[in-house]
Image (cartoon, rainbow, N blue to C red; front, side, top):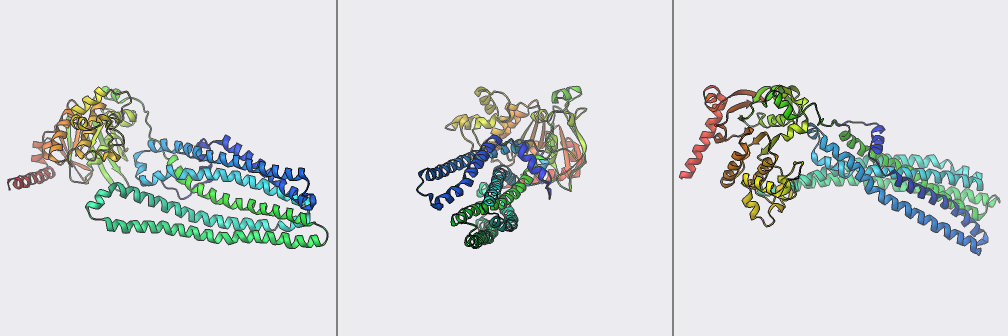
Length: 586
């Protein structure tokens, strides 16, 4: 999903028609608007007759008030329909964007911050609806403009032709103002997205900020972001300040032409004063109608900018979920070994994995070790098929991964990491998350028991219905880990990935999580990342990774004899244990 510098109007139009906007409501609103304008076009003529001396004609005065009331009612109906279409249009556009966000490959998420993607769903759809509404308004303005000139031409051709040269001037002013407004509004949108992203990133991490005493620096950085937003808003305000006198100049010129040249025509006997009043009312409408073109241009440019960003999402490729065969069928054809064959991978331009060859044997425990940043977690992402290799391939047995249904592959693997992700909701919701069948409370309780989570769940006032809070913030680290392990038990996967699953826990929580993980590992193919020797040494196979390459593989004893990097990592761990032991003795 690359950022494209330019997009054609096709993207804008394609989004409008793809999003299933409420066209029936738009049409009804437009009909009401046209009907109101039709009535309004007749009002100056009625007013002209009244000023001609027919003010005591009850039927004429009644006609004026009936027409005025009808126009107001129709405008109200149109406005009401607009108020309905806005939330419906936003919802339908969001319906179009959200499934795409869920189906985008993980690689596309790295190309722009996820917090900015929120704006694509929450803010940008509003600009699309505004453009459609303003398009209707522009068509109505065109109808009113043409109607006004036709009526005025019938009243006096000379004064009508005298007003024609002002139309290009109004259009030029409207386009200039619209262009400047669009540029400054685009900057406002960009700054607003950055401001939203800044606050959304900092506020959930307030504990980190306070623990490192960074309040002052964050206040300063926040002030810079706020100032940038203010600067963008100020530029937009300056454009509006420039636009106001330009637009007023249009009104002044029109009024001057009507009064001065109209006065001459009255003096010559070609017009009556009542005609001048009617002309004045019509040109007031002409001024407002022409201004709608500038508003439409401005709104459309804003919508085009929003549609470009949305199109970057919609034009990206979906992950292909359905392939040739199921995971079980592929595994049954030969074996369940997962193989990385000549795999190279990069998130950007630099390779994280280079020509990697390794085998995860079915039914065994494989430990992946190596220095920080060597590519261990990326190996897990490749095994889960969150990313596709740039070069090489992944296989299960003899079957290439690209032939296996993607959702089937992922559902066969449970992943438990050091930063266990939980979603807001109840403990039950999180344990059963990802299960596509009804799960009984007995199953949830059994899984929680196996995960050593039942005790703290039963101690909670609401039990399984206890709210975990945003990102699981109401649970401790150990509790979050055990909820994630209970989820893995419910999944009952064939393969288990453990990424430093106990690294950030205290001794008590670590002991409970260790027991839960031991239960979970039984009769499953397990791959673990750990810096802790006590988890690694009993693995059936240990794979050493360094700088994105396999540095060696074998058992603990074999690697101690043959692999210098592994021996170095073991020495570091043993020194750590020695320091801890010395600390306890003192």
